[in-house]
Length: 304
Image (cartoon, rainbow, N blue to C red; front, side):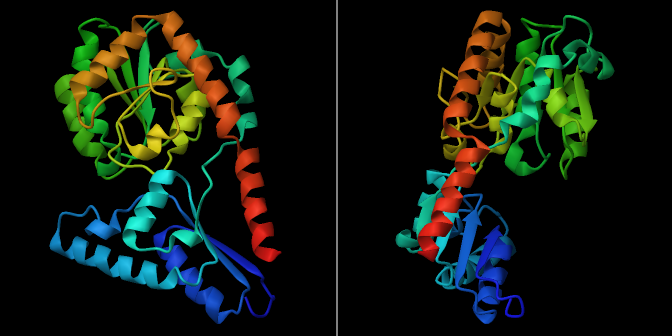
């Protein structure tokens, strides 16, 4: 940093923020900006149930709070994350909310996508409705709740398929649950570089997460024109409009997820209306251009 006379360092994530703040100070950079993507709840000892995990959370909170003084500004991807930082003890004057945005041009393919071919490649029978998610199979994403919801969906839509795109530490556990429940109607794709194409071939997108900052995958689902069923994570609620772009189900309530999914599968007109509303909401509030503009405005304020 000193050799190249770097004037501004921008970092993302808890440990990168802590380390790069120290490096920026030692490197004599003029400005350091951190971005926080998740509400880590360090003020309450974090989410780890183990004594060791909670000790680590308190230690990280101490380091994060102390080094946050080095950052000129700390960008929060949602107001939920900002509130969490204030509760943690970070100076509110340093905090600014710049919500996530996505590049809508990456979804220009949708108009020419052969949805039928994508579904056939995954083994989905012709005419079967498709519910799905794109998520890391970790405790945070609570994919098991979505799996448990499917028997309730099959009561009304026995041909429905659940597509799970992603991998992670709980993959085998979720597969074992699906084997008990699904009799072949739950499809695991693993990691896929064409996840957007698979998402665009779905009818309903679900995200039963237990915590998020502001989930990009929900923005991507709306870019695909999909209605969303999600849990009431505050960061997710900042991305959707309840009953207009998304239906909300309580945390871990597979019966409510089943009910909301079935409600959407029952009504193609409702799905289309909510999907269209989602794209409009996205274009107004969550574009990459807006995010870049807000970030550049912040840099210019700091350098003026």
